[in-house]
Length: 422
Ligand code: PLP
Image (cartoon, rainbow, N blue to C red; front, side, top):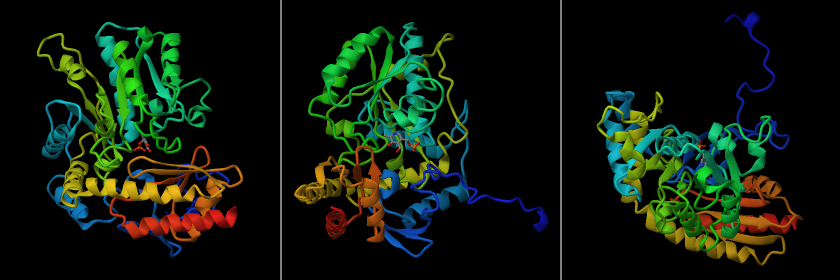
């Protein structure tokens, strides 16, 4: 294009998530390099990544082993689709590996491009399951208040953070959704009765709520949810997009809480973000009817060009090796204990209402006198990335390769910033 024909651009062309919020507009930080638990920005900052990006960079940033896995795979086969008769060997291998790691016995593994994708598939499959069973009224998907399940059509529709559901002209983009209490299992039971269990296809829940404010489950809550599901023929979908692949010191939070879900969604930690990949683990009683060898076997018509992407799968396989080789799951358990101790000391501050830690996930809730957004902004000036969440809460979820000293430095910086703003 000649210079004279250059279009006039109003600011950066890239429409990134929430960039148009007044608190963000014109103040964005552009990362152009990273190493381990640190990222570097184009304006010369070196920042400790106290959130592991969006809870994804679990094995740390810019690891050569993962770059090599991607390079070698692309040199051999970038990808081949997995529709109909076709497969690619890497997707097959990752399917086997995930089936071995799965807390659901003998699962089928559906692969796609991320967490929002995985949620769409899980909710569609739950509805397809009941249609196939002839229980055609079972269409409602329940989710928890303050839940975040991504922002595709289903994730938007089942959002428990109301602002993510608002603005589309109807209660939800996809019909037949409702919210249940996040903490109170008796209230969940009442909602199920009011709607009618014969209309409910599934309940979706994050074992530890992330974006809703780092909310660990109330004692007995998840077990209660599972009981309600079993008693009422409702499928339990656990959204392990954050918690899967080690964030709680277990491969899945399902194991930590001793649960038996029908479907598990995953993403983020499966590749530590080195390639876009997510998916769903599907229990046998859901997949078996679709695999019957008969002329009237039902079909689940779902797929995508990049489902089972070979390079993403190669990266995932290497990432799963690293979790093992570097013994990162037991390390997460140590980090959880250290983070809990350090954050607990912050509760001495008048401005701190509460701190919550479950796995290597922490939340600090501040009184209304302080703003989590202002605290996280100021922490950037001290060299630390954290994130403001719902409920005036500061998110902490660093990479698993973080050192004890780095945790202490992060919490010391938080203490300094809070005391200066108190
Ligand atoms: N589910 C949960 C619990 C999440 O935290 C997220 C993202 O943060 C998603 C789903 C959506 O995943 P993605 O952003 O990969 O689409």
